[in-house]
Image 1 (cartoon, rainbow, N blue to C red):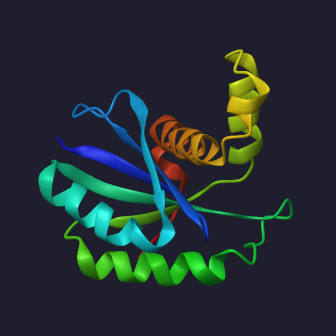
Image 2 (cartoon, rainbow, N blue to C red):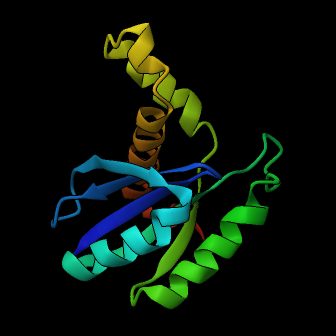
Length: 142
């Protein structure tokens, strides 16, 4: 069994989270610049036993895809050509809100809560946790 890598893709930064090899516990991995994300993920998949990559797909409250899909989908298509594992989308509604709430609950100071890279990494972890809790939440395989 290999790890699952989660991606919270943004125009500037990409938050990454990964499971343990038994796919039980998700944890934040890092945040990278969007322009470096595909190469970073490719190298990570090559060096670790990664079974699949999941990418958060933002939706509006109505369930419709948000405009962000216009830059997330091309990234996912590029990544699919670079890695030899399945790349899947999962619903990522409310992950940023949950990330901020998690930071508040953890007692982080205001300055730390304003760290957007940390928010992105926590968001990726939340996406991954959600995926693990309900693997049927996969909305699309590309």
